[in-house]
Image (cartoon, rainbow, N blue to C red; front, side):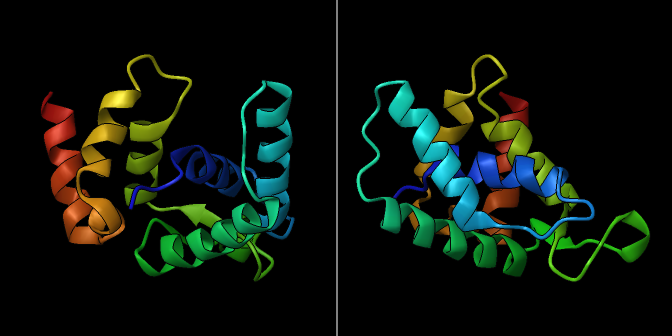
Length: 130
């Protein structure tokens, strides 16, 4: 299993911009699908992508990549902030940075374990050294 890094990247960017508004992973998945379709890419099932986005939200929260946004930072109980680990993940997979494929490949080598905190931290420390 490999992760949909484009979708995770979108979710993490939306976390950064979620002050004072509720986090909506399914809507972000739909926006991504529309962008990919306009670019001529096949997305498969939109329902699957939306479900995957909701699953990723839960997984990112549980694994400590995102945390509830404090009220003083625009938190409303339904939005998040990136943790240090989340910022590190975003910097590794951000498609706007040149050479983004290599960190994604390193994470893909770990399969489902790529977002397990201890596994991610080990991969992230290796990626920084490369």
